[in-house]
Image (tube, rainbow, N blue to C red):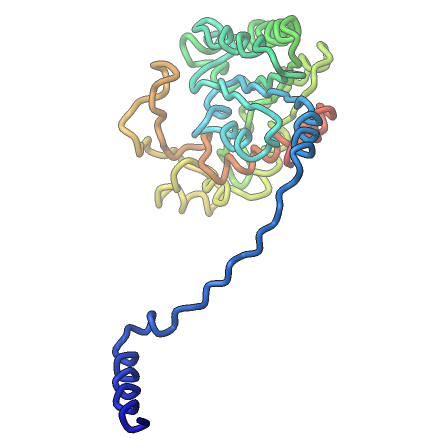
Length: 302
């Protein structure tokens, strides 16, 4: 009898050896223990204990140095606010304090201020780059119209029940002999003066950005742009002096003047920001905002 079983054992061993390795090593399946869920009364009690959330909103108003893609605003909304704060970036490239209102963008911002459901709405306002002379339809007089326009923005924000926050204009990044050429200082000082006169919270982005850009120098500051500097621009920056860069664009469009739907240009220049610049100055805005508006500090990620 033992002799008759042996061929079967040999055949069985051969058959097992012929099976795929995965079939030979199939793990043992152990059923998971069955656990009972919480009682229905526990779920009902938990639902009854849910409290309504308290949500705030931040609205960004300004030009291309604030708008999504070419400014700090996109990084600010995405990385510097907790999830209990809604962030709406209404900045438009190429706008100053006059044409932002004239084209209807300010009316859109006012409509956002009126949306119900928010405990408090904060409106950050940054203009200056396009209010400078030489831009037909956009530039405003520094001594009269520019401050008057800012005062009106502040007054109308308060009339809507929102909190205005003035932001001084972001610095440009042009150098001469190692020194930053600060052509926006008069506009920044005008914003500071309006903030004092109207008792409006101020984020002094101009001061913080000037300090940061001066400290890093011309060559490192060039890396904050939307595109890497061309070779001749990078070489000049190593000497501490910036030179004019050809307007070579990565997108076949013109400056964003057609309206909010227009695709933005992507260029190397000394004004607009790529990802590194946006991240740096978004952090500066968050830090300045936490000091200027302490009630919002808990919602900021500095």
